Image 1 (cartoon, rainbow, N blue to C red):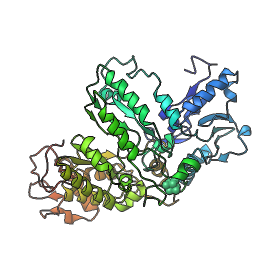
Image 2 (cartoon, rainbow, N blue to C red; image 1 turned 180 degrees about the horizontal axis):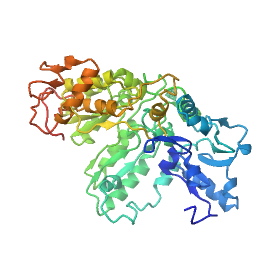
Image 3 (tube, rainbow, N blue to C red; image 1 turned 45 degrees about the vertical axis):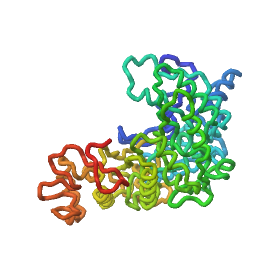
Image 4 (cartoon, rainbow, N blue to C red; image 1 turned 90 degrees about the vertical axis):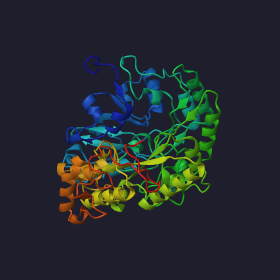
Length: 502
Ligand code: SF4
């Protein structure tokens, strides 16, 4: 675009630009890359959701301001000569230092992470020789009224006309409602907070109901709303009163290792919205497919959301994301302790029993996350053995830009503590950790055996009831080797398993 329109103001944005706004690790190239603003030769980069920044930029251009002079819009990044870096800016380690990885990269990430809040974030500068990339503080999140106005705009509600082939995910997206933005979950492997921020904002009931009425009129609508959610379905408000007025605590997570005493968990409004949507003519079912943060749900003393969820919004199985069970890995990930998940499993089974429903839990797990050693992957495999659940798919961690986990991956340091963290980056170790999560698959047999020997856990090879690798031709986990489908016993549902998943 820059080659074709040399003098045209070129402004980039969207998720990719947002996460690559400063120097970042690129997994595909396995190297540090400069800010995408330099590589794209654009004039300005808009990060975050962008609506407020776009209006300010448009107004400035309209007033005749040159794009090179637009340097004060919150939620934007620009390039300037080193001599013009604002005095108030925090200096991040320069690009040459960052190339060495290690402590400089971890430090840069920490400073960026702690300045990603619209109330407390400061301007930051990253030097590249004689010039610098300067990031203004984030734009404040939209208010509820502003969000409602955005979602009332006449969107096309379809794929770009350049797509001629059917897009499989389209129906689900087309008939889903975005209810909120932002996330205070602070999972280390997620870039959402780096893009939308930690302060949750949400749309009003009226706005969501109005949009649902538009969906109902669509000739392709079959009566099913596929989702009413966002980054985390059951977040609708800032984590606490302070967060909404003064910003998030820079050095603390709201939910882990223990829920913050100031955290407010309340599902009343979400329940009310879901009830209102269910009542609309033309709607047969309203699903919730965005992730539910179960630890937040269990902090709600009214304890009324789970039964509402199970009774009306689950289609036979609920996907949840405990992500791991080893305490060391959960701590690095910023996920709740295993005991919290176990308690949720118990309550889920209890509620479904009361409702007379056979609904299952499908937990998601990540292998090879920073902080995960072979012993942690074995702990995970033993948990899967004991619950007779083998996931059909395993998410193998890979480092995407803008996450705390990626900063750990590249630097070998946890930026928030400054301590070294184990990185399972070698091909064999990653393959072992991944295979352990599907230890009973015939194709994983040899690598799992090798992993167990390497970890000194030969006690898990043999014919005993705890064996992960059996020597008698039977499949560990109770299924015979000839079976091709993995055992997927629903978590929280007694002893009987199901074959082949859903
Ligand atoms: S006080 Fe607690 S809940 Fe509020 S922002 Fe800080 S850590 Fe989160």
